[in-house]
Amino acid sequence: MTKKRIVSGMRPTGRMHLGHLHGALLNWKMLQKDYECFYFIADWHALTSDYAKPEIIGNSSYGIVMDWISVGIDPEVATIFVQSSIKEHAELHLIFSMITPLAWLERNPTYKEQLKEITQKDIHTYGFLGYPVLQAADILMYMANGVPVGEDQAPHVELTREIARRFNFLYGPTFPEPDVLLVKETSKLLGIDNRKMSKSYDNAIFLTDTDEVIRSKVSQMITDPQRMRKSDPGNPDVCNVYSFHEIYTDPADVAEIDAACRSASVGCVECKRRMAANLIKGLGPVREKRMELEADRETIRNIVERGNEKARLIASETMRRVREAVKI
Ligand code: TRP
Image (cartoon, rainbow, N blue to C red):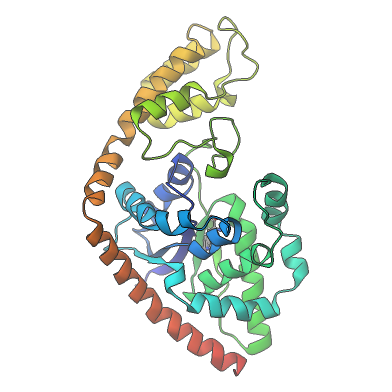
C-alpha cells in the first residue's frame, strides 16, 4: 500500500525552540511512520516579514535542519529540502496569485493578528498579504493529502483547499484538496512571559540554550498570577511552569508537585529550580546529537541536496501539468 503524502514547512528565523519541538517537531517525527513526509525550510516565507534583515534566514537554514535531525527527523525516511532551491514554488505562487480573491487574504485571521502583534517590522507588503498563497503553492506542488500544522495554521490550509478548488474549477481537475492534520500539542507550552512561544516575542527557550541560560529563563517564567505570596495556594492548571513539568518531570514527581503547589508547601522558586533541572536533562540527548552534526556540515549539505533533488523532480512534473491546464 502506498503511503499518503504530507508536506509541512518551517520558517528559518533563528534556532528551534521548545514551542517548535512540542508544537510540531515531535509530531513530524511520529508521522514518519505512516506517511511519505516532505519537510522543508520555508525561507521565502521568512523573507515576507524579515526582508529587511535577511541574513538570519540564510544563516539559520542549515542549523534548523540540524535541529530537526537531532530531535529525530530521519533524512533516510523524510525528504528534507529548502523552498528557495525549488524555483517552481515561485511560479506556482504567481499563478495562484492570479486566481486568489483579495478578500480571502484580507480576512485571514493570522494576517490580522500579525498586523496587530508585530510592530517592529513593517509587514504592510504585497508579499506578506500573499503569505498563504505561497503556502498553498508549497502544499499543492507535492499533491499532498495532508498538512500537519498547529491550529494557528489551519486557516492557511483551508485557504489552500479553496485555491485548489478554484484552480480545478477554472482549469480542470489538477489538485487534491489536502486535509489539515491538526498537530495535537503534547501540552500548551507558552513562552516565559505566558504569550505564545516565539522568537519575535523574545520569550523562547531554545533547544541549543546552555544550562545556565535555561535556568535563568525558567526563573523568569510567569506562574499562577493569582499566587502572590509563597503562602498562597497555587493552581497548577493555569501555570506554565507546571505544563513544562508535565513533559519533563517524572510522573510521580508531577503528582507531588501538583499537590505541593495546591497546598502551598512548595514555592514557585523551588518548583522552577526542579523543572529547569529536568528540562536540562531531557534535552541532553538532543544536544549531544546536535553537536555531532555540527562537526559534520558536509553531511548536512548532502542531505539537503538529496532532498532538493527529490522535491525538484516532483515539482517540475506538477508545473508541467499546471502549464498544460492553464494553457500557458
Ligand atoms: N506558515 C507555516 C508556519 O509559519 C510555515 C509553512 C510555509 C508551511 N509553507 C508551509 C507549513 C506549507 C505547512 C505547509 O508555521
